[in-house]
Length: 127
Image (tube, rainbow, N blue to C red; front, side):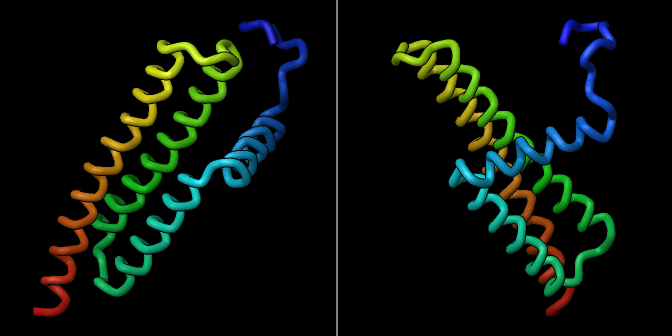
């Protein structure tokens, strides 16, 4: 599609279909997204047990959504790099490594935020 052109532009609902198609592809092909979905499930169960407040739920859900979105962007970057540089090139490898590092850094900070939120809720619930 040419930017600004309405020719061959998908409908609003068809765009959702493309997004679901992309998510299904990542679920089938990427191990890390499954690990992150497992972390999301763990956070939900821990939040239910700890009795999170609405604000705490908002923090947990926003953090989990950011991690999942970052992994999807990382997969898109890796796919584009593989397309433009099918053979190994040090710069292509560096781009993929940096994209993966961005997800890793986000996961570290989200993990700390999760510990703070769930830890304070657990202290409140059990003391």
